[in-house]
Length: 134
Image 1 (cartoon, helix red, strand yellow):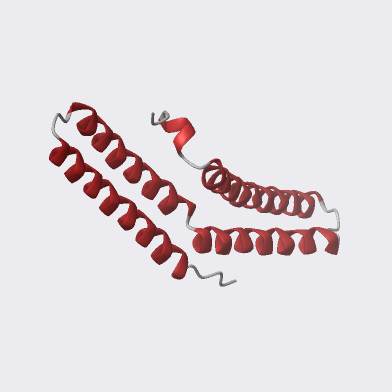
Image 2 (spheres, rainbow, N blue to C red):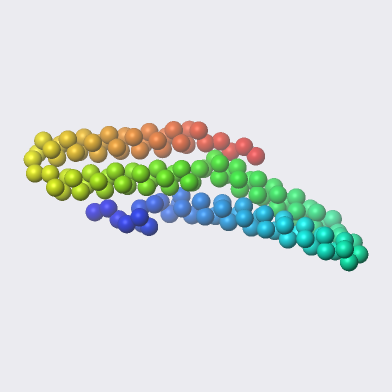
């Protein structure tokens, strides 16, 4: 029996997508906050140390590295691929349960084999095109 949507998506792909999105947003928020801190410090006349500037640069590097991983791993496309694969298998399972004759069941199993082949092909193409450029 096929599991529900929450269980079917590989937890690794969904977790990667969530982690990389949060990394990018927290880096942007951190850089924005540090820039506000520097601006406020300059307005009130306090000298800003080089530590904050270095921290901003490191946040920018972290954000770019996270973005490079996101583009390389492409978790959004992976989740989409798994969802499409699951929908096709669920449809075939329903048709297989309703099929009465052996030739019809054999045709549906051949269709399942084609779908599995297409999924594997999509997986290989997706990961062959992965690029981690920073």
